[in-house]
Image 1 (cartoon, rainbow, N blue to C red):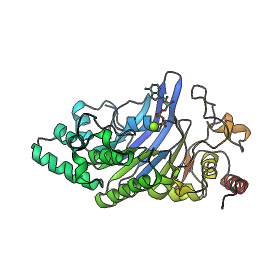
Image 2: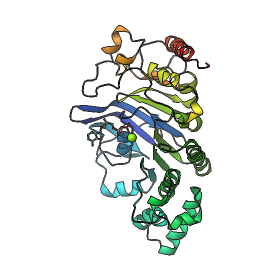
Image 3: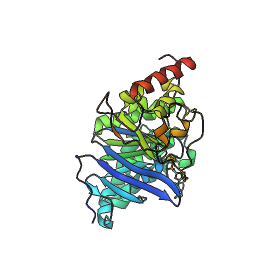
Image 4: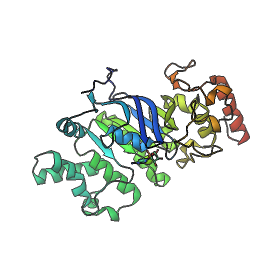
Length: 334
Ligand code: ADP
Ligand code: MG
């Protein structure tokens, strides 16, 4: 069995994870640590490899290289028995809900309990009712089918099912995608309440900057399969240190808008089969230096804030000045 490098007591630790589908590189040399009790967001544009990353964390897919440790267990060569035990310690809310259309909401929520416990049916129903109310749904929703639910209710039902086994760790794939701002804010508040009440560790995958700003503790920014920067939500939003993040923020006039466009940066996402040897953002970076296309910047603590990790050859002042200029051009208050 591969021994993952001993790290901190991180709930999730990924080391040098690479993922390829043929020539298509989805992740390259990706490192990640999620600490207990935090709400950790992975943000990136469509196709940047967010869902694939999540699938690798929950044993639905194996990376091409690198190591992943979840709740202290190395996922490489994990036995079926250990995998089963681990799956009972986390809950997953999939991007499209993942509920079974032929089962009622209550039956969907009770399913993990039927699969993983010997509890009697009446008790399972009782627990499922409780999870339904924890997720902010009314009791009458229990007998409805997924097709009868609104987008926001579907997300809540899916969250109730993810909570069925009292997980320590919760994975949310695009928890607010497709919701109107009111429903998105509701889900947002619910997630924060759950973390505060139950001390959950939450990993969230999203392209919605508004959610991230208001909800998350730690943010990782993915582009071209690599980490551009990572730090507290406050650091990332008030002083982005990578031109990609700065571009995203400049393109989002109001963070609380909830419907922030992610790809308002000129140019197209990189061709993942032909990434430059250097930084994947080089072609779209208005500030690129000669070495940016050829020398890959190392992800390292930032000079201005050691808790921020950044992979960029530029100095932070240049990035900040450029962000101010972009905002001024777009008439956005600094
Ligand atoms: P995101 O969630 O950030 O939108 P995904 O992780 O879903 O991105 O996908 C990242 C890239 O990997 C996409 O270009 C997608 O087409 C590709 N990809 C994902 N799964 C597979 C697969 N099973 N086979 C081939 N390509 C895949
Ligand atoms: Mg996705």
